[in-house]
Image (cartoon, rainbow over all chains, first blue to last red; front, side):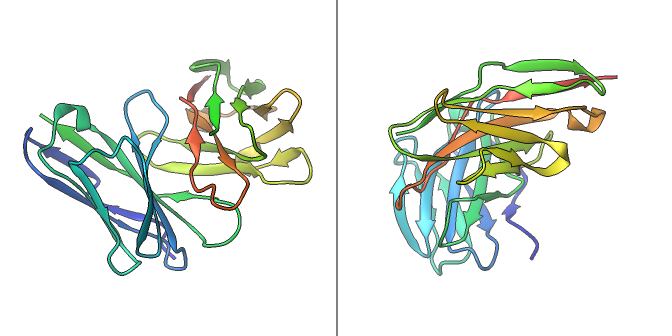
Length: 114
Length: 115
């Protein structure tokens, strides 16, 4: 078990470009979460999957954001037509199906939009 | 919904001194409570959690926290800090009922340990 893996760790892009982040959760975890963390703030919930089903989305997840988890394993988070306000750390976490939601976080993907 | 308030954005403390990082929560339902630590350019690491049972919870790296339901608090303490404890600390709350899927985080407290 190598924990939660995120790729890439850093991404610098120009405004208007599309970016995609990948998350590989802990293999036996069937819940997967995406959070966004801006400078000086705590993580904010974006969306949540149980297996391949996206069960909840935050109001923070605008139409330019889309997340998928096609086979219930890894997940991708795509941001289309990036804006400078999208600059943040995007954190992925996973947790087991049953019991309390004890989330294990990845190291995050830092996005800088120029 | 739940929310968390971390009253102190920054806490400087001398090495080997005790420290308390404060956390208050708001919720209309019973809760689970967590403290996470974040080192620079890293993700969040779980320090400790309160799910049920004893209100005094011990975690990793010598940290502990006490759940106080009447004061809706979950303060984090360590009797003697080390330089390596310098990091950002986040308190988080989750509803304990089935279907409560999200963690709500506070804005964080930056602990700086001074040699």
